[in-house]
Amino acid sequence: MSGFCVFGMTEALAKRLARDAADKHAFTREERDSMTPAKWEAWIAEKAEDILEHGNVRQVSPAFDAPQFADEWIAPAKRTCCAKRCRIMVRGEKVDSSGSVVLNKRGLPVMTWVPYRGVVKMAEAA
Image (tube, rainbow, N blue to C red; front, side, top):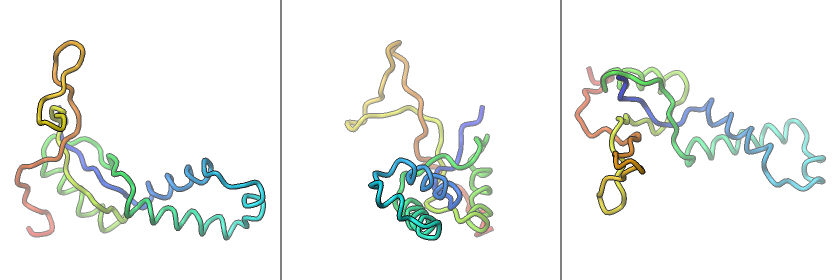
């Protein structure tokens, strides 16, 4: 069972989210009509940079069987595709703000991605 993955934000994902946001953004008709392709691309680039720095992190890697594989995925991702805020997540039980395990309607714990708290030797340090 694959229980580890990497959550973060990549430049490509941020650009895609910015393009989606541009389609849904509440521009007035005059603003939308006056936007040249250069202005449009500049707006998307600015929005993508904001998403890259401050947007919610998403799953950016496939699932792995062990945390060291996820760690090995992070190093080249940071070099090649501008991945930021990468962290290893593991499948685990969801807990509420008081620390109690959240149960589904059948009384079983709800499984979700939670931060991995184990020790992983960084691939760059090796």
